[in-house]
Image (tube, rainbow, N blue to C red; front, top):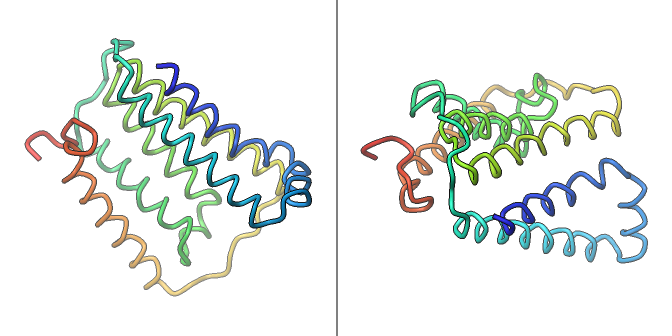
Length: 189
């Protein structure tokens, strides 16, 4: 469990520190250069992800609480919304006109859905930890950036493409979930 926790802490701090201490990023860029800074940032994030993956596989889950739900349309909808919002954060469209932080809100939807489905220690650590990180990230970004300026309206076809990509990604993960993560996302799939 220690590797999993360490991975989540490194992931969270690597993302939160630039928001909490905006001048720190500037000092790193001045010392390293933009490309080296981005490379180092990416390297640390990949390292954190590897710690999370190996920590997950190594951790022996113990029951923390009885999950309040089994796979249901609600949990599936939350995860699907999470996928669409995650895609929307990087794509042009109107979703960002209505949701200031689509990637973080998507992460929260994904995390909450998994917490409704899983009550073991490693699930609580992973999904709870990343949900808390996403909430803190929203608060830090809002503090750093101040008032939100909504983007201009975009063609609706861009949102249709975003939703379609989110649906395809969701369907692929549902189909391959058992092979990738050891448990079927939907019983029988």
